Image 1 (tube, helix red, strand yellow):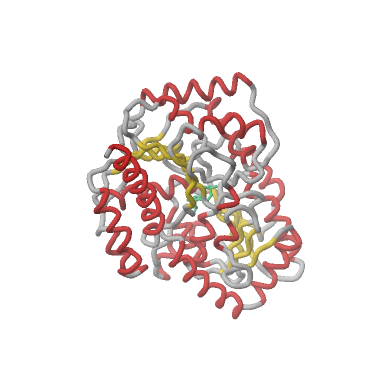
Image 2 (cartoon, rainbow, N blue to C red; image 1 turned 135 degrees about the vertical axis):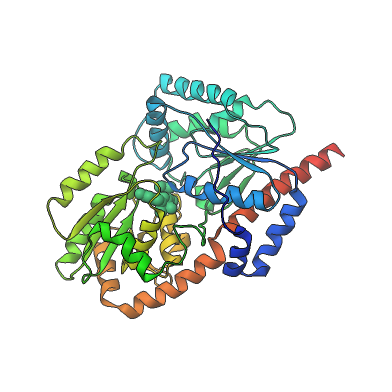
Length: 416
Ligand code: UDP
């Protein structure tokens, strides 16, 4: 099975979004959907759970269907060798050291070729997310389709050899989409900018009552009287969980607080167990650090954790965007986060959070936030408005439909 069936229970998403962003913000989305009614979209990525892309697709696919644009979601099958190769591609595109061998190149193409035969790629728009399934474009068969590559990675310091393997593949698409202008490489195809977004209605982000939160958090056994400083992330070196502990230990010399590192793994991430072991070794037997290993569907627990934390940290070393930050800002949380990748789109320094660049900087920001409830409140209020205007799903859906409408119009005028 390659198709993901998205849950479509409860009232229409669009009604809830109207309450969150207002009628005006939905008008262009609904207009574009009317223009594209009946055109079919296929989304493709490499995992149905774990990581930000899967998080987005579960709701965006449902929203597009509600809007009358039939949309399906295909997950590319892979194996351990393929995921090891694509993890290297992911890390090196983010500027991490690493190389691919000629046989890695061949295997990447081989898995993509097999997947092209297995997946239902029969949309008018095929939107391919990230490098893993990028090679599918080499097997496009149906004339009249539009193929778009959606890159969630910060390519600004991409390892040149790995990028030169991928660049000719990306050159076969009709357009490419990036989260930020600084990520856009030199390309022969049109590039569009679409930052990611979160769902204000999902289990991850909806309002919770005090009783619900208590019930959800009780199993974690966190101290009630100390403020919590929390990072929610897959156990990945790029998220620097060990650096979070280092910053916490510096901050802890001056402040009383409890650190929570909450995370799980993603199906396409082979390094999680290794990184988790490093984190456990660093935390040792300290009673003021909780490492919460969560199942992939622990959305409500993460929601409650973010809401109950005094400070949310995202000390990533590289980052495409970090949905976790929009999630925290939407909950009016005070955020301390690294000034890397797409994070500064969300964290406007001293307005919606504090940006940091180092372990001591992170420790200082945590300290400042813990000491000032007024500052936390001010940043939280502005952070929520920033997310409301820029980083909720209706805006991302509108951006995709606008690109799609442009491709369709260009094809229609070529045919006329
Ligand atoms: N997440 C989760 N469980 C975890 C860790 C993360 O549900 O154990 C969620 C997190 O709340 C966010 C997404 O997965 O919605 C991660 O997206 P982000 O852009 O922050 O990072 P990525 O993992 O895509 O690099």
